[in-house]
Length: 89
Image (tube, rainbow, N blue to C red; front, side, top):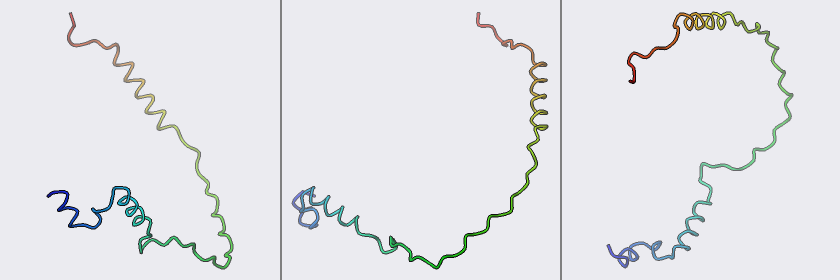
């Protein structure tokens, strides 16, 4: 399709690049029907919500972490030094 045929099909294509960009910006600046940017009307003052009761938590227990650390330390002690299977000589 030649440039002349393209221009005869669309009035938008007859505009210069700057004019096309301006039309695009104008079209994009229009709010869509489902976008509501209005500020909601202030409602009657409601009392502030009461804070929830404080929850009492158990202090963290590290016995499981200590058990894992002990198993890792025992495995390191049993493993010994690393020796490669093949030599690079």
